[in-house]
Image 1 (cartoon, one colour):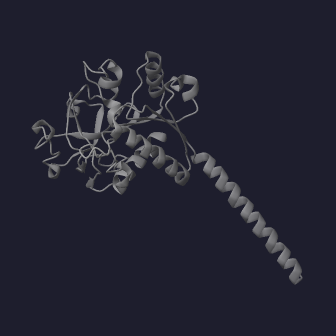
Image 2 (tube, helix red, strand yellow; image 1 turned 90 degrees about the vertical axis):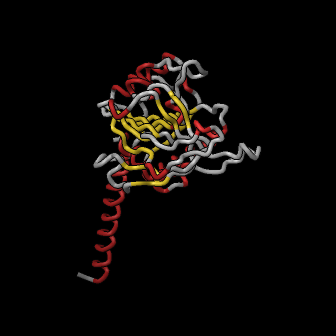
Image 3 (cartoon, helix red, strand yellow; image 1 turned 135 degrees about the vertical axis):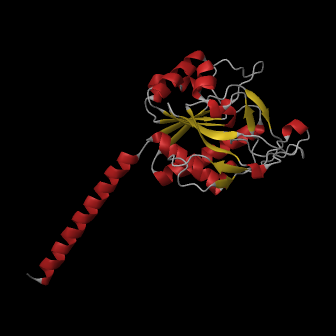
Length: 278
């Protein structure tokens, strides 16, 4: 065989390899792709709005890196069966639906195997308030937390203890992680007594005192506080995180912290997203 023939064959083989690799990669990419839709309001709390803006920067970057799509909307009328059929995961960014039809569509979506991540104010409910505890399935069965009871202040970093064991969301996480500043919530119901709830992270005792007031009730000195958990009957994870620190005292309202700036916190959220998407 001539030298020219060898060259031609090598070129043909290389082209075939590139085609097969590219085709295989494309098929693999197609196989891995999932679709995420985030719903949010821009409520009056600037700390929540700041978090929402951060999330809408973070998740598109992760979508490019990990081969999924990310859409976000303030149009909650899209929380319906037809629209949701395009997506494998829903995010509630510091928000929850108020309309009964939207609530029913979400409940059906979750009971049919959809994935969900909720952040911070998405779990808030307090009667009487602007956001009453008027959705029994969501607050008592799905989240298991019931009503909001109290919070820390000012937003403060915390050391969280990994309680997930070999759960897919936490098994590659260290025993403790440090978060960025957050306003931490306490809940009506004891999640440790709910067999459907798996607590993934809680406030570690090394975090106390947590908060600096000025109200003494806004400083936690002891106690047990779950902050990340899942309901075993659904593909879901709730995160208490989602409240950036803001310069309220200085009256500039500038953002002083960003939730996704903590590498371990960002990894935990990404782990959860990948898990609920499966």
